[in-house]
Length: 102
Image (cartoon, rainbow, N blue to C red; front, side):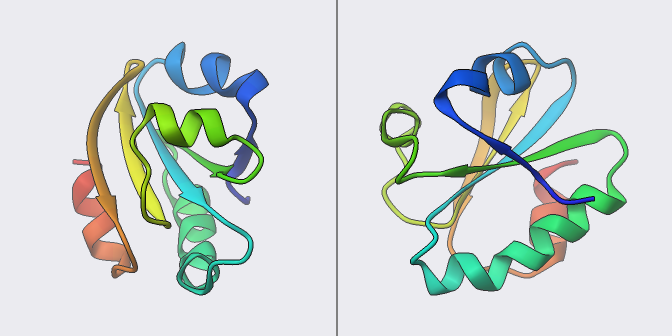
């Protein structure tokens, strides 16, 4: 399973109204580090039954990136019951992202 791609239109329903944890990867298609992280994000989507894993293309949803203070890509934000609770930016090993979700 790959991560769910979100737009401004479905972000509220898929993230802000979701129960439990949601990991959102804010990325750009032109970003080399984002391309490096993409397979890891898709692995997490496969492995984590209790966490919804999503991606937001910042060029397609600039307002969302601005709203959540995304200045560097990739940026990962963990939402819990609709609230942003943790964020980290840049390339990182999978265990670091897993720790964010605890």
